[in-house]
Image 1: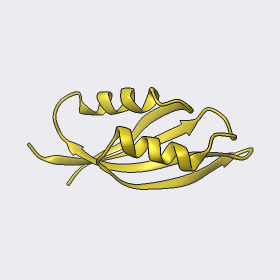
Image 2 (image 1 turned 90 degrees about the horizontal axis):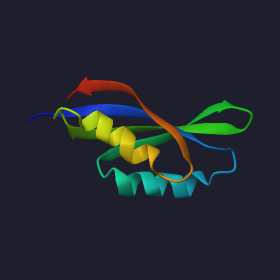
Image 3 (image 1 turned 90 degrees about the vertical axis):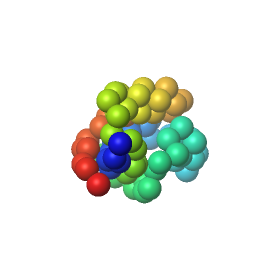
Length: 85
């Protein structure tokens, strides 16, 4: 099996969410994270855009979304892009 790079946008449920703490929880749930950047959305709300390297097994992206959506403080996590490495 090969590896793919996945770009995920994580929306916090409010502007008051501690992004530093949220970043550390994301890294705990998804150990393949290579980079996390803040992306301003508006009205003080920032999304987190992360890049992770995962196996290209079937259903892996759905599992990632499920793991990240279960984290407290996350309103929505969605896969933006998947690319082969």
